[in-house]
Amino acid sequence: MSQPTSSNRKSGRKIIAQNKKARHDYAIVDTFEAGIALTGTEVKSLRLGRASLVDGFATIDDGEVWLRNVHIPEYEQGSWTNHEPRRTRKLLLHRGEILRLIGKTKESGLTLVPLALYFSAGKVKVELALARGKRSYDKRQDLARRDADREVRRALGRRAKGME
Image (cartoon, rainbow, N blue to C red; front, side, top):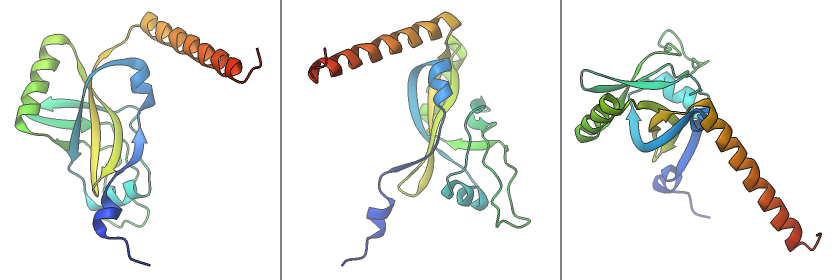
């Protein structure tokens, strides 16, 4: 029996946290993958699968992108070196991507929302969405469309099984 190599173990995408509410509240225009500058205790806490993106958002200040209001709980075995759970964290993006984001957020009223936090090749990444807020009637239309699609799939499934 062979030992797994470090490349096999670190490949893939292990999701830590998702922001399902963001897809309901916002119309997603574009998505980006960004690295995050974290402390050691934050990474250890994330390895335990503990994080919340619910109130999170990103801002662009002085040509840098910052992730705000994302909750990563303190690491229980951490000592005085522990981190603050809701601290502002720097996102790591290429300069061209940052300039594009600055242009889009300034001109058309778009906002930056984190959709998912995950490990990719051993590094913590965040899927950042360029999004436009939905109105309440848009949300109702989406729910109605989803319900109608679900009913169609049920009817087709029953028909395929010969129940109708």
